[in-house]
Image 1 (spheres, rainbow, N blue to C red):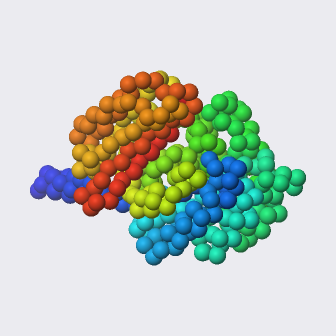
Image 2: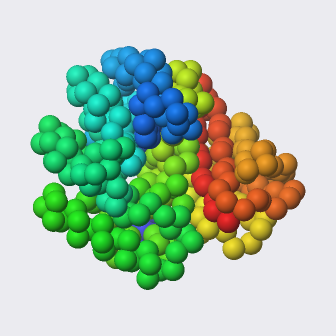
Image 3: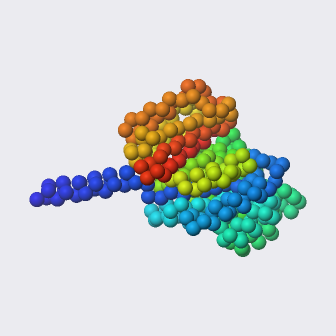
Length: 337
């Protein structure tokens, strides 16, 4: 009788595990802006027409625009997000956000997180906000995240230099805002394992990169994706596609360190839902363009083998798959060399 009960419990657990493995519970897309209507910098700015089109799309009933920290807490605590959940983030505290971006977000009731690199926030810097303006916006409902102090390429720094960046930034936040942000965004989206572990020591809840992809419960909480929006990649069709995509359910991703040590890197990962394997496609890009690859599929395991080395700097892998429900899944990851 005892053995029969053990066997019954085993099969119940097996069925629960199998059910979970074939379903992705939560998906959320986070968009990233820098500047608004600053045509001098098209790689980091959206046009006003693009921005207005985005706001019109985000305001549709089919979407649920939530504070980023709410999205993160829901996933961490195994809650349930609404369908088509969207989060909005802004990097660098450019003055155009104060003059153009925030008034429009506020009018639409859209929550925003501003990631601030503290070195530029001073009275005599005409291109960025000052602390009085940030406090003003914070009182109006703006959330604040950390973005280091000097906006360096952090992966090129020693770990002591990174620690200094974080500590200076934290002290300034504490002095100016009375608290230290719990969310962090990597400058340029560049990170390595040492820096990620350091952020954990400093009790940051999560950290964001700058690579495209959808967040779900298998995502690396210290290297979360965001869709960057600018003049080239800010067209409404791309925004609509990303807003309606779902997480791919990637786990056991290698290489685990975003700053690669071997070039070309050996890339591999597994999928929660094996049914997505037949339709998955992956693409790798660096400064020279698309990299020729071979894609291998072994049950739930995917392997990407590159036919040449990656160029120095940032490179990206993007994988998409279309499910039986006709919804697209999207995973992205950035490497640094």
